[in-house]
Length: 283
Image (tube, rainbow, N blue to C red):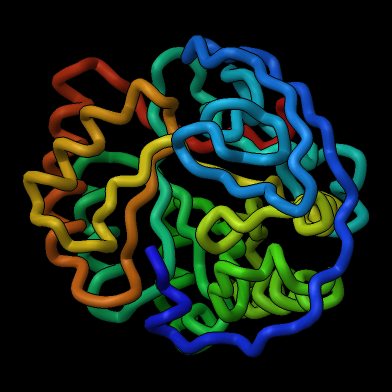
């Protein structure tokens, strides 16, 4: 999912030293074991437990159950938003979180919204700042439909974990501002690092500004355009890793994503699986 290679590379900068974080996450209803680890400077979040923040398989970020926190980012949320990477669902049980990355896109975001509306599903849209700025009408449509917003940085630099803290802060907070303005002031509730390139500093910056770091458990691999059937099969096979599924509405032709999303939602309904939003304030 090398979006940066498609959207333009950000120049190399010197790497700032980052604090080693040891985060202990409680096992969730998904039966993912609690793991602690310390990996300096490597805080990636992927489905197979390589998240150096020490949050176990899939960067396990908290228990299920209701998480009703609302309100604006910034000072109002300081101390309430955990820095740990979230994966669990507010809906609890075996509910699934649908997340959509790299938009908004004038062709594919409306099609994704149509599919979600058809199935009565709410999703979390992780938006690139300049894309949101260029398409404020789409951002407002996402909000009006009851979906949530997530900051996916300005440049989608998947190597930002190797960049200075000041660079990470600009990427996160400048994108947040662009998305909020495009949304007419709607809250940006989450932050997802490009390619899972989280650092303890980026997670701290996000949480201090009201955004819960958001990971994923299932990479649908839709960005690679392997075919609709392959995308659906990947989701079915990997959903045992945890509840948060990654799709894309930006970065190229997403027709396979649109088709696969409908099939996945049909399958989830047949399995009696609810959908929900990722936890925001739960540990």
